Length: 65
Length: 250
Image (cartoon, each protein chain N blue to C red):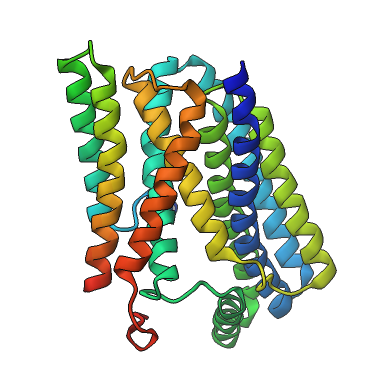
């Protein structure tokens, strides 16, 4: 059972730093959506460009290691 | 309506391609067990895995209707981002030569070698071990397929198109596997993972945003724009991460 749960978690988390960064971006977008509900696209922009930025920086860092 | 219609083909294609990758991986393990121990334990394990998978779908499927749509979109969106960007990251690193490409022939050789080693140590239990190996492979790869179908299909009532794509891929791989009896090493797995990673990440941004109350410009068509942006950034990322072949990490 533990093995199955570990394998299931592995479906979503491979590189811990990437997973944490994605969660942080979603949380930030959620906070912005709550604070300025009149401009929902602000949260959308944070989400979209945050995810793109996180991906780019994570891959570039891994490539330099 | 136009937006929803525009979503059908991306959903079917993404479900088909993603399921193709998972089915090929499961087939490699089933074939390895069949080679070492014969068709019976391999087939029984695979059938048991499919049965367990069907039970999970039947038991948990109806619960989807009870979850509020915004919450469902948010949860599915975040999971899609984690899942899709994980695939995309790995595909980029493989394209850049940072990590080696996944090779079904190598995976098949490693699986058969491990089963033979287990046979040397404990012959009597090997049919059981072989059956459990295929059971686990079919169940885990199948769960990935189920997740992809739910993630792509549940947000806009497209479970049927997503299921059609996934089932078609699984049947295709099973049929080809039955005919050729070899791991499908010529399937361009990294290219598929690259494409599917981009599509799943684009869907992930879309659903997560919808779950947070974002009204995307262009509605469903925004997904196409997100996919184009992920593709462009991934291309840049491959160039940034690229390293000479001699430096490829094991």
